[in-house]
Image (cartoon, rainbow, N blue to C red; front, side, top):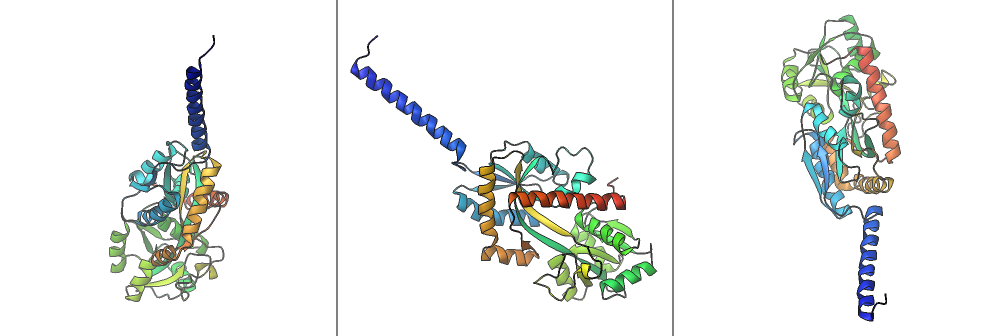
Length: 328
């Protein structure tokens, strides 16, 4: 059947529109990311360090990508609820997790965890890492890490130590320290940092591993004594505080913070996010924020971040098993 010229023009136009639409769909699938807002889940309540860092990153990252980053707090079950929400999302780069050290710890500590930190996430970019500090009560007759170890050994099994929560990094840092130093002490867990500090300042516990900047501020007020930092070397913002590793070689505890997505995210999207986040980490505004929180920027590739998560998970698994830590 022959078509007249007007029909040929109409069909030709329709075919052109179809080809354009198909080309646009392919382009969007291949590289026009992002073309809508991105959701960044924080698996803890507003106001904490993770929430603060996530929101500090969201604004400049959204500007760099040309789409808003919406921070969503999904707290509950020690971070499991929010993390599982991300695991179950489509791996298209529009749902991200701002995660931290508990992901590494829970891999071993929690039974029946509905995901694995090692296989169910795509590591995108580590943002920062920071140490804890070993602090002792004013009544403890020790002013150095070695003096405290000697004192703890002389009073083996008689000392108490506090932590903001059982199974948290503060608790496990103390367990690691006890094991490496060769003494025993009783763990006294509290529900949060503030309750632990109230008991701490009363002198009812002998030592604990505390938050870096907060502990230094309390030490300046004469409420406690800071003996050492858990980073592998001294921190530039507190060069007078020795690294614990100067006394116990190999002792290192750092809390990490970073961005992850669901497993099997496209490499191009992962690389784009990594590149933009790494640019932000070296900005002056971010450096100032890190200094106020006792953190340092950690610029890594996705592969390096993934390797670190595996290493960190293995380290905590060793501490948990050796110290027989359980949440029962």
